Length: 128
Image (cartoon, rainbow, N blue to C red):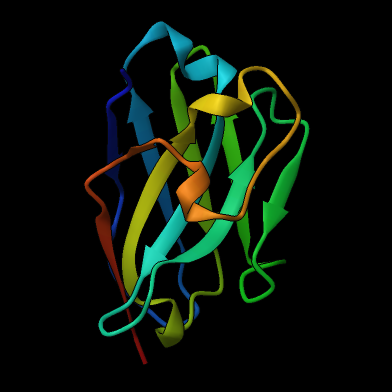
């Protein structure tokens, strides 16, 4: 079992930056691919970014590519999402998730159902 706790959300003006963190419990964290998803009010949860267990592979949603960067520190059991040039449409609750089935493979998924463990979410609000 892995527990995930997100932090770093808040209110920021358009054009600003935030860095989200996701701290994981458990020794098996380092074997999992990790993902960030977000859900805005009245919308479905959508993929934002994902990273393989080693950090060697990353994927981004088109809407955030070039502005957001996902990274991880396996020694600290933490995955990060650096968000720059924020836009009002980035406003959402951001969730981190762990893919237990990835198990040291290089595969990463954009599909929420592929992920087994989820954090409680952190609110990001971007004002115009």
